[in-house]
Image (cartoon, rainbow, N blue to C red; front, side):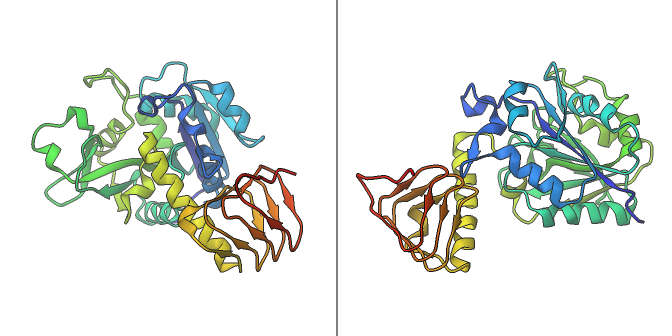
Length: 322
């Protein structure tokens, strides 16, 4: 079955209480870049022809960092994911195809993962296709419910699980592809019939299943890729993962990084071949370092700095900012 087209809804309305911050969660930086922008890159990479970002907490701050052409809507009351998606649907009123639900706090999510999800969804003709993950400790996550034929028949949020369901290891990442028209119709049927009186997007799965629609699933190999950054600990882990990719890309391009574990290079930096970066060096956003330079150790290169070919930058206590 050929896909009619792809639209993306990015949920970015929450405050993120576990971050213990007044700063919107999706604006917390990963390698010097707001994490929501990694998700916006992904939307472009998967070829989404339309996209909508759902904002809520300090929406004005978040909207300022989004690309200029981004369509946004406001969730005035944060009362669940189904309500957030419902706010976005009018912006996709004329769209007929696959709607993929993404989250603004998943900077590690890969194009290949979402492409595989979209492919399964298109080929199966399912009403919904869920990105699942298997976790040793699934506490806090919605559990995937399967019937006697091992087909997905629903999702139960952790707080609503009984003792048996709490033992299920397969969880819902929240990333789901939907047939747009079936999603729109099902959202109207979602009721706040759970303990927190919220409107769960996961209830749409039960509604679709109840009317005889097919629900598919794709299990992601690494659960950490698809799960959101919800705490400072998880933020540090995301920074470490993205930093490793940045450093490896420079080394593959001919830059020597003596100790990648102690070298912090922010998003948007360029470094010429045969440059050597010594340990305990910090390079901020959009720095341009030409070839055959020696940087550090203990150097701090400020945002936007330009460094000419064959330059030696001494480390602490000096810094380079021009």
